[in-house]
Image (cartoon, rainbow, N blue to C red; front, side, top):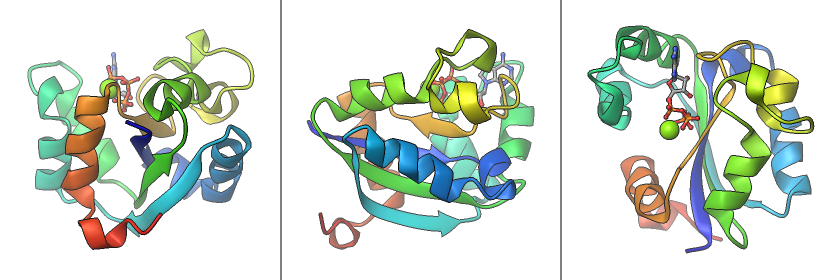
Length: 138
Ligand code: ATP
Ligand code: MG
C-alpha cells in the first residue's frame, strides 16, 4: 500500500503549524491527497485510540485530542507508512532525530504534534474511520 493516515494534532493546530508541517510532508515525497480540519468528539477519539484504552495516559490523551481542532489527512507516496513514521520521528520528542516533525515541533510525549499509521492494515482502517471513498480524489 502506498497510502498512510495522518493527524496534525491539537498542540500543532493551536500554534498555527499546519502549513509548516504540510511543507515537511511534501518535501519528503508524500502527497496530501485528502485533508480536513475537524474537532474530534470524545467518542471519535476513544474509538480511534481504542488500542490504548487500558493505558494510564488514555484519559489525558482523549482530553488532549479533543481540546482543539485537528487536521486529518491521507498521504500518498512510496512506502508511505514507513516513510511518514520516519518523517514524524519518535513518540517522545527527546528521542526524535534531527529534521523530524516531532524534533522540530513536539512539546512533550503527549503533545507530539502528529499521528501516523503504524502499519498498512491500520492505515486502511484509520483512513476509513475519517474519509469516505469519494473524499479521496488523488
Ligand atoms: P501516534 O499513534 O499518535 O502516531 P505513536 O504511534 O508514536 O503515536 P503510541 O504509542 O501509539 O505512539 O501513542 C499514541 C499517542 O498517545 C502518542 O502519540 C502520544 O500523544 C500519547 N502517548 C503515548 N505514550 C504516552 C505517555 N507515556 N504519556 C502520555 N501520552 C502518551
Ligand atoms: Mg501509534
